[in-house]
Amino acid sequence: MYYIIGSGPSGVSCAYALLRQGRKVTLLDSGMELEPARSRQLVELQSIPPEQWGPGERAFLKEGMGADTRGIPVKLAYGSDFPYRGVAGATEIQLEKASVATSYAQGGFSNVWGSAVLPYRQSDIEDWPIEENKLARHYRSVFQFMPLAARRDGLEKQFPLYAQSYEPLQMSRQAAAMLRDLDRHASSLAGKGVQYGAARIAVHARQNGHDCAQCGLCMYGCPYQLIYSTRTTLRQLQQNPDFHYVSGFHATRVEEFGEQVKISGRSLPGQAHQSFMGERVYLACGFLETTALLLRSLDAYNRAIPASDSQYFLLPLLRFRGMAGVRTESLQTLAQLFLEINDPTVSPYTVHLQTYTYNDLFAVAVRSALWGVGRVLPTTGLLSRLLLFQGYLHSSQSGRLAIELRRLPSGDDLLHVSAIEQPETRRQIGALIRKLFTMAGDLRAVPMPSQLRVGAPGRGFHGGGSLPMRRQPQGLETDVFGRPAGLRRIHAVDSSIFPSIPATTITLTAMANAHRIGDEWEHYA
Image (cartoon, rainbow, N blue to C red; front, top):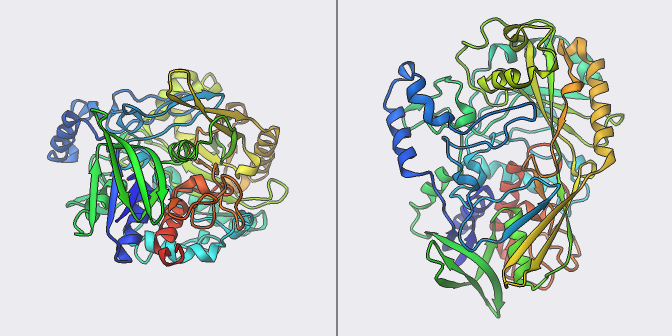
């Protein structure tokens, strides 16, 4: 039996690959789920035509969600914090200037992600022991089970689609207007090292008989569950007789015994000791939990190990012209456009910008802080012109993380995560803002640097690199199959093994790399 720990993107992708290789797979999972009462509310909402969804029917979706000039403090799912909830016996995490989280939910953070997907470029992963072309067929395999909403456009020159089937989602009118402006200035932008196109998002065009209702509720959780979650793939895997899903288990240690591995942990919620024996185990717990599990298993206490982050920032823009009716438009509110900046005067690596247009959380942020210009423009006028870039930098130009597993006097473990900010981060963002000002005529928009918000390291959920893959691993580094030096049958398969983290979206490559490791099992002997 081959075991996988974790049902998030890396876990289900690895399971998919192993099953295609004819392996028997058991996936172990803490498996936290949406509360039954909220699930019932969601089913009830789905039974009502969207045009009849009033404030009362939608209210439960928006519970606990808010926004300010720093973004959304905590992105909930259908008004629930279940993706962030801890489980009994989980390692306590202590943060110092960092903003990271773990998920014990079925599907992990795919319950609350923004669903943006874009592959990595070779020039951004030169320090990896594998090349982009080694990942290409695994990107294609991931898109065999993960949906893609996309268009063929200028992004393809640097970022292949890889998917055989995809459908475009309707853009907001603000985004469509900006795209027309970008197309009019395409030659100028290309000369400035800018590729652009429609955002690529993992969204079903249709599922369970429902199409996108353009209801503007994406940020709270799609009422029709069209935004991809690995829970969808998990249900499909459960139809395979060679696949077994065990929920309610929290792993605490993994060990090799000759040709076998032992996985020890506790059943939930009672915390009774439980163990499993198998041929191999693949750790896909999310990079923090995978790191803690391996450090504990290797008795690597009180050793601060470095980790990486692709640092996240928010930068509002004002369009030269407003778009009437943004508050009443029927639309989806996920990322609308991608801009990829490849300009050595800004950064030697790609800078990734996701463009968001109006959603009702914009209005909340404007009311709370007026974004510094509310005294000049009326709120409605401001919202008609307001866009938001959510940006990411390569990890080499981002803040760093240090992770240390400590044994407490009580006998419990503590995972201490501290952040080390890099002065270069602000310099790189400053260079980007200066470039955006030179592009104002192409964008028909100007950035608002006074409203720049740079997230603490880890805030953008693009972290990893604590157990980096190397051609010749030493210590806690791993080989190209995610095995720490000296281990043969224990594989880390999530972003914990990324040597660096490019700015473009992390989840797609985490899935492709996990699929690669599961697919190439014959090399593990």
